Amino acid sequence: MAAALCVLGACSHSDPAKAPDETVAQAVASDAPDPSAAASDAAPPVAAATAAPSGDCRLIDTASVEKAMHDSVASVKVDATSCDFRFKVAPTDLTVEYDASGGADDLNILRNTVAGASGAMNGAVAAASSAAPGVAKMAAGIVAMSTPRGLPVLGDDQFASGGVATFLGVRRGDAYVQISVVALPDGVDPWSATADLVRETFANQH
Image (cartoon, rainbow, N blue to C red; front, side):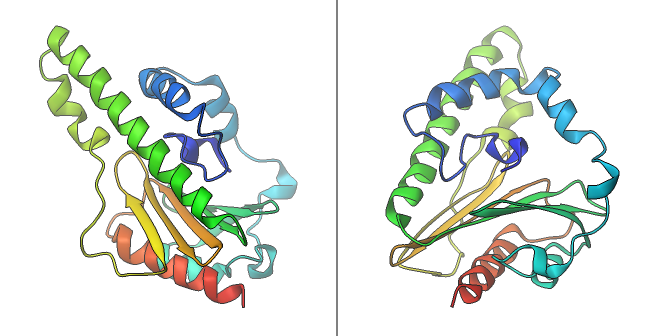
């Protein structure tokens, strides 16, 4: 998974015991230059620069991703359990993950990690605001985490959060899909888009 999508430590297979410490460090360092991020944002090698065909990601087809994000896919990075999409216009980083088993554990990791990261960032902002008035107000949109009330029921259990990044994890039986997005394109509704991606990913597994 791309490093940007783990900004809250909410990769579904992250170590839950380490997540709170990691997310505090990431939150504190969020305004500082990140050498590793600079490296990951660098231009990819020539061989990887062309757009990936729709068949490259077995979890979901590229046409479905482009429809949800309202942008053309520029490249896809694929591993055994996830596909990370980058786009031609918007600086969007979208990761689609699928786990055929262990869905309850995956969803609990997402819930616990997002909750821990939210608390840590709010604590850091509160401490900083006492020394620099206005910090809390400026950071309010970044640290606010919320589960949308209007999100449709997509499985047996689910969790969603918006803030620095948008996360939607859904369990159906033992299977699990997680959608993680940083920098959604303008005009894209996060919950409609991620719900569509969850539906398409589950559909592709049958």
